[in-house]
Image (cartoon, rainbow, N blue to C red; front, side):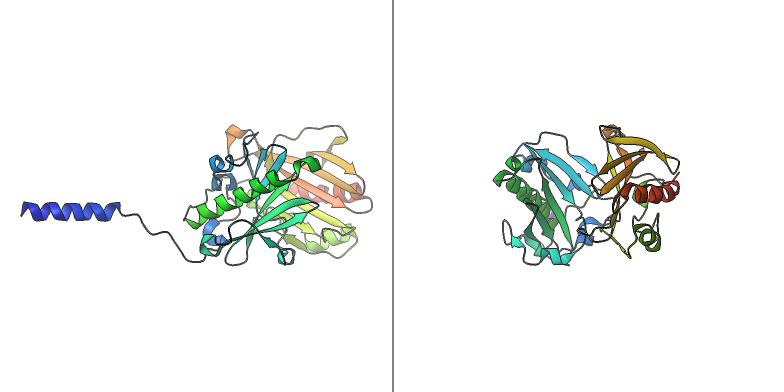
Amino acid sequence: MFAALSAAVLMLAGCAAAPEPLPSSPLTLHEALGDPTTVDFCGLLDFAEIEKTQRLVAVPMPSMGACSFQTGRTLVSFGFPDDRANERLTGAAPVGEPSLPRGLRVVRTDLQGQPVLHLLFADDTSLRIGTFFESREGAGPDALAVATKTAETAARALAAGKRAKHLDYRGDSLARLTACTALWSDAEISARLGAAVTGKGDLSRHSCRWGEEDAERLVRLEFGLGPRPKAAAGVREETVGGHRSLVQEAGDGCTILTGHIGGPDASRDQVEHAVLAVRAPDACGVARALAATAWPKLPA
């Protein structure tokens, strides 16, 4: 009797210790991330593994819809793509291992000579791994290697069932707004811009673009996290729509930024901000008029 009980206990212990099989079904972005408006993209990355390729030179910083970190002279941004134009991925070149699990793929497109990778999910949605550097010296195999390692570590973690962490934004956070509809209508933007445009947002809903990227008339709105805004050379501090704003004019474009409330992680000393960028004749005039309408609508 005792021997039988011992055998039963060992059998149960063996069953309890057996690892659960890894998921194998095709992975969609929604299944991987859940609520797209609050994803902590830094929490999806294995930085110890990434540093086997190149060491980080700064603490990774989360923002709304992305995680940014610097290795050497390259800044890497991992998160939602700037837009959802799938045609930009047509003919993209496969990168790294062709047989990532659960139908995931990594492809490459370049933007102004800088490698951009896309982690494609089974439902044809994607995440973007962008690389940015100040000079051509930063371009090269090191930047591509770091971007590739970033994509592959994220893909393998998600494929293995790792659940995305989510940032705990406050109730009056900009993260609660949908950039394309919260502050203006398409008709208001079109009237100010002098061209008929429709807002196109990303999956996070934290950014929106009215007009094509290469058009002469363009408006972009982005909600994000970052250091406290400070005036610098070439930047004017003004009160626009009742909010302290920083205005910068460059060529045919103008940018207006205003700070909001503290970010979800007080230890990082980040603040939320809204950034409005306009490209048009009299860009700053258009930007000031739009900001004067929009900033009073930000959550109090």
